[in-house]
Image 1: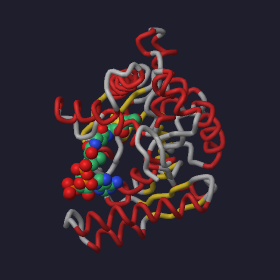
Image 2 (image 1 turned 180 degrees about the vertical axis):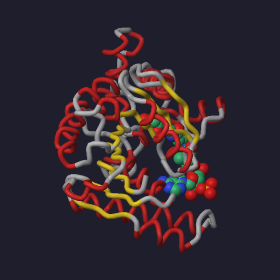
Image 3 (image 1 turned 180 degrees about the horizontal axis):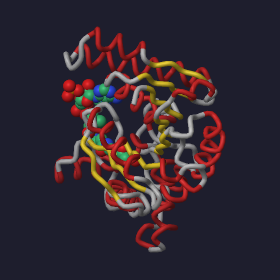
Image 4 (image 1 turned 90 degrees about the vertical axis):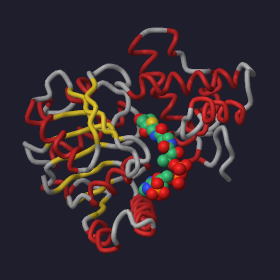
Length: 281
Ligand code: CAA
C-alpha cells in the first residue's frame, strides 16, 4: 500500500491520518468543510510537535509526515488510494451515504475499511459493490497513543483483504485484536456498559462526578475516570454505541441511561462541545 484515503477529519480521522503519515504512507484526508480540514491539520501538527519535543520522533520525521498529508472536501483525488478508511460520525445512514458517493471514485481493487466502533461490518459492506474487500478497522482514541486496532471481518471479507489490513496495522506499530462481527465488537461491548453504569451511578445519586471518577481511577487503576472518559469519547458517540448494543442484543441491561440521553439532547457532548460531565469552557 502507498496511498490511503481517510474520510472524516474529527478526533479519530485526524489521529488515523497522524499515525499513517508518520509510517510513511501518502494520506488523502477528506471532510465536509475546508475549515474542519484546516483544524485537523493544525491538530496533527500540534500533536506531532509534542512528540518532537518529547523526543519520540524527530523534526525531520514530522516534516516528512506533514508533507504526505493532502486534504480535500471531495473524494476526487481518491482514485489512486489502495485503501480508504471511513472515520465519519457513528451513524449508519451517514456511513452508507459516504460509501455510496465514494465507490465510483475509487479503483475496483481499493480496500474499504470503516472505523465504526459498533455498527455491523456485514451490513455496511453490503451497501458497497465489494463486500469481499470491506473490513472493520477500529482504532482507539487518542490514536497516536493507544496500541490497539480491532479488526473485524464481515461475513464476506476475503482473506487477502484481512491480511493486507492486518499487515498495515502492524506496520503502524499497533497490536491487532480480532473480533467477530457482533454489536460494538470487543472493546466497546465491555467498556461502554461500564461507562453507562457510571452514568446510572451518578443519576441515582450514589456518588458525585468527582467521587465516581476518583473511585475508578484510584480504586481500579483506570487512567481516566469513566465520566471523564465519556466526555473524551463524546457523549453522542457513547449514546449511539449503547443504542446499537441495546437494539442489536435485545437485552435491557444495555438500556442507555436517561441522563446520558438528556445530556445529548441538551447538546452537552463532552469535550468537543465544551460541556459534558465536566465544564471545559
Ligand atoms: N497525540 C500524540 N500524543 C498524545 C496525544 C495525541 N493526541 N494525546 C496524548 N498524547 C501523549 C502525550 O504526549 C504523553 O506522551 P508521553 O508518555 O511521552 O509523555 C502521553 O500521551 C500521555 O499524555 P498526557 O501526559 O498528556 O496525559 P495522561 O498521562 O493523562 O494520558 C491519555 C492521556 C493517554 C489519554 C490517558 O489518560 C489514557 O490512556 N486514557 C484512556 C484512554 C482510553 O481509554 N481510550 C480508549 C477510549 S475508547 C475508544 O477509543 C473506542 C471507541 O470506539 C469509543
